[in-house]
Length: 102
Image 1 (cartoon, rainbow, N blue to C red):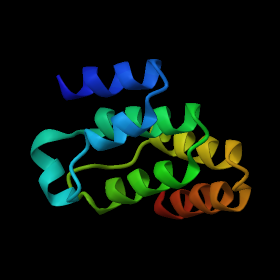
Image 2 (cartoon, rainbow, N blue to C red; image 1 turned 45 degrees about the vertical axis):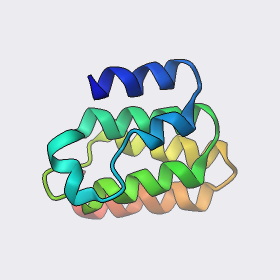
Image 3 (tube, rainbow, N blue to C red; image 1 turned 180 degrees about the vertical axis):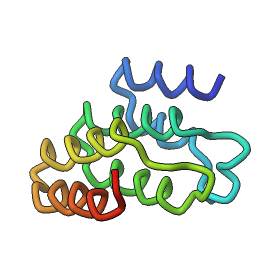
Image 4 (cartoon, rainbow, N blue to C red; image 1 turned 135 degrees about the horizontal axis):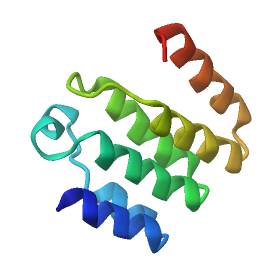
């Protein structure tokens, strides 16, 4: 249900609502949010050029031990940065993940 709600927010360009649906504490996210939830929320931010919000969600993903960032999440976060004029952040994201083996 959570994934469907976040995806609906993404399709409707309601990025802020998508981010509110994710738990504040990444440790709580283990039970209620998964990789798809986070990726969809990042994509919602990307579509609205909300780089800072996308980076915040990406950071929460990185802190959640049960999640392994995938190419979909990385690409959405990098695209949000590029679309928001933060190309340095996009390059840093890609380089960081390359070093981690993604």
